[in-house]
Amino acid sequence: MTSSPKKLHILITGATSGISNQLTKDYLLAGHKVYAVGRDDQALAALKELGAETINLDLMDRDKVIEAFDKISQVDLAICGAGMCEYLDMPDFDSSVFMKVLSVNMGTLSHAIEGVLPKLIESKGRLVGIGSASAYVPFARAEAYGSSKAAIHYLMKTLQISLAPQGVAVSLVVPGFVETPMTKQNDFSMPFLQTTEQASRAIRAGIENGNKVIEFPKKLTLPLKTLGALPDMIWQQVSKKMNKK
Image (cartoon, rainbow, N blue to C red):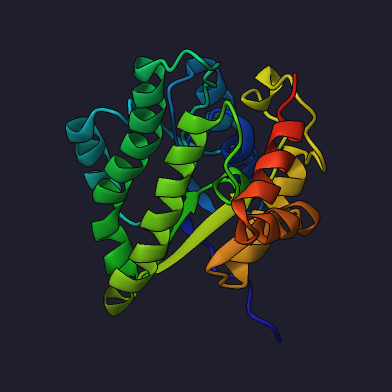
């Protein structure tokens, strides 16, 4: 007789949109306890009807994040998926846009980590952060977004080392292009575009397998990693072609 899969207590930020929204639905469907964190009341209400415990929270407010997460009794898995994207159009370098993207993407993640980490240490759980394949190769117009994702890559890989003594596993998710409200603004070709359902399957499988890095689709991420290792002249030319309007 086989035992039934363990039901997890899962915290998901950015749960009202995109990949995190799909992950929330899929984990609920699998019978897990999900704490869905977001700011869209309508989307939160829909998730609550599906059985989620919803938390309307501004993740940029550090004190409120710590207070809200402290009230949660148990977290076995935390998926930090909140974020934003805005592009820069040269020759105008808008530092306000740059700092907004960097602040939101790193701020929401770092506040969430601080708030949930005591729970993960207690449960010997797993922390998951969402990066991007854009961090592998610099792309024109993605100066702000790519910089924030490169920072996330460094942070999550560092936490893999520093949190190991506490028994907390850490995974970095590196998606390619995924069909979400965020990518609808893109006015360039998005090769190997994935659905949120495909993204959710890849992420959940990677988490279940205990992967430290969860990359998808490989037919995009592997070439980008290869390009990133080539001389600057080569990847700069590829980047220019991919980002032409």
